[in-house]
Length: 636
Image 1 (cartoon, rainbow, N blue to C red):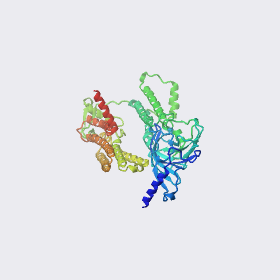
Image 2 (cartoon, rainbow, N blue to C red; image 1 turned 180 degrees about the horizontal axis):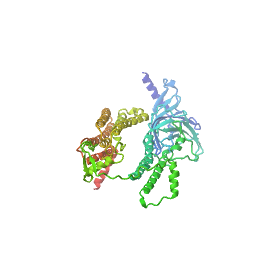
Image 3 (cartoon, rainbow, N blue to C red; image 1 turned 60 degrees about the vertical axis):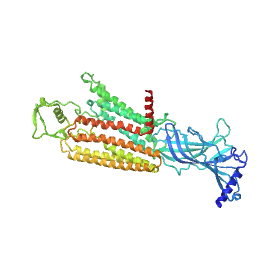
Image 4 (tube, one colour; image 1 turned 30 degrees about the vertical axis):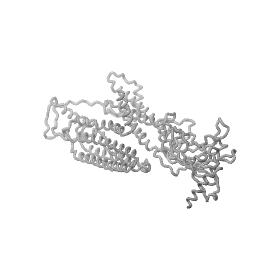
């Protein structure tokens, strides 16, 4: 009965209020009065920050409150009815818009209901996804802090007709969803009164300044740390012997690697005069004061790491040029001109002392006097792991001229300097186990994203990502160090690796001792990694498939299944090639050429097939490829 009575009085109130009401005119009793509109913005989520196009996409809740002088009633006359909710199109609404809107479709606020009180106060709450222009300063990338402004004001009414007031000193951030890339420092509000050149009347507005700080962990681990590690390779070019022929190749390779990282940064950053921190140095006169990030003054870091990429590339260029100069001097031969006296004094005395280089005798590349070769040499008939071992009682003497090419190669390796009792190489390929553990991390990431999408941002925080990275490579490097320790205990009979890359089986074939322990531990490590990897991935993908089966959205199912199938195919391809590579070392009748081919396939097939597999399971790439194929087919 009460609900029926309220409904009857609400209908009567609506009829009485809007019998002579018009929504086209400003609702004031006197046209000279100023209508006050209170604005309050609540930031719900930062959807995207497009640094290249300088556009910020955010999800906001906007509240506007004003008093309509024509929509007042005595609530006692309507059975105590205090408020009513009606569509916003029934009443006059302030034309408050976002001045710096960057959306292609400039649409107004959503037509939600308004709440009208008996004293004429109208509250209009509406959500909005806004795209606003934001000037992005990338001078300190990736340790930058940005300030994006949201300026709200009336489009047609001046300050003598409509005045905008901010309800609070800052936007409401209580319901904010955290962003994985940006940290929200605050969003203060400020009222401005501006007089434009076209008009003498003032135009008030309220500006909300969103202060953001980039979470730099991702860029530090993917851009800065690899660059630092690569830059340490440049001075090693001077340590290579001049006869190796790889001094210039090392410098050029390091230069190309840094160029790739520079291109990655260039794709993210907008084309402007402000160069990123890792690509620029120096502080311009008259510039703004440096912000403080992570309790460290950025100016200190800026002066230390400024022009990092450019300085590193300059250093590598100079290093390569000096390497070419050194090799030119080395290969001049007897026809070279004598070194000037001043050059000897500057280089051998002053520069040598500055670099702590002293002449203590012959260097490592000085030729040794050749000893007369004996007419007979021992040859061992016993073998271990397919390699020549130490001499035993069954050794025979053959003339030097009657030895085969393979025997001469074996003898040369055994008699080469440094091949006996020393480790000929410390090159180890640690990426094989890293691939398995990395796919485990990828499957876990997909499991959290698909099965727990609402908790993804709270689970995959930067600290968790860093822990996963350290766990993956920590386990991998621990296993590699174990194999390394087992390798150095064995004596070497050869120093030439017949495979195209350096791995544990190839190093074992250079040894002369008992390799049973190495084989057992190596197989055990491989089995453990395989079992752990397959268990984690099987659990993750089974959970993902169950979640897709329960999900009602066909689009979500298809996207999740495509992601899982693509990653599983990549794993199967790598497992197939890696298994053949491992088996090729376990059978003695496998030729060396086949082992080399299988060794090259593990570096060629997965990198070539991975982009194709991911591309075919990505709808945009697949549809584009099909359209191109159809056009060519029609043209033919």
